[in-house]
Length: 206
Image 1 (tube, rainbow, N blue to C red):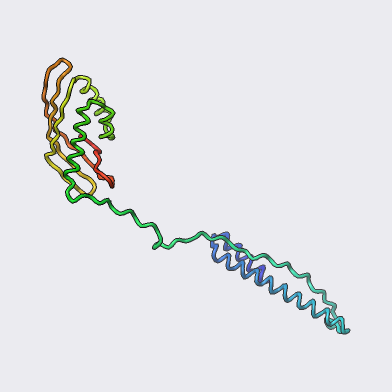
Image 2 (cartoon, rainbow, N blue to C red):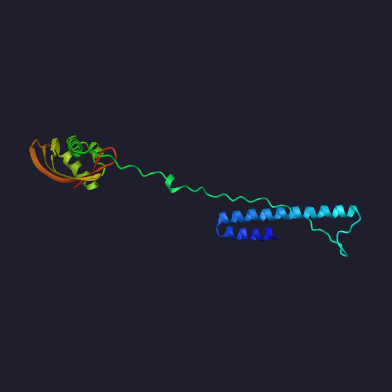
């Protein structure tokens, strides 16, 4: 029947994951079966009326109507909700940087100097979390060899590219050794900072 044909077609489409087309074909199959059932019921009613007035239902051949096929339930296939590209969440806005980042970057380098002066490795890691194992070992040795320490880190060169900054520091250490000797040593290094959307952070010192 037409309903069976539509049903086979729908199953084939569903097997190929063409769910929208399969749902439409299954609906047509259900409609065809419903129509066939209504036709069968109409024929049965006509034969009943004919028998009641003495008229044969056919000429020369007794016709037995097939039992009506029960209507198949309409198949509804769930379809994943589609989201319009225009409804997608917009990308986050880039961080708003100050017109002149130099003061904040100088402040970060000054905070790094104060952390070194504290001779506390935990404080230094808080300011410079990306410190390598070798750098940590050298600082720990340096701190153990000193009684007091002063660090001066003036920024001599600053290059900013978007949210990344490169600085050159020409500074010095002035410290008193455990033997009581006062020494001064120059310290020149370069550092990379990055703006995380709220503030500049010290990333790498080399």
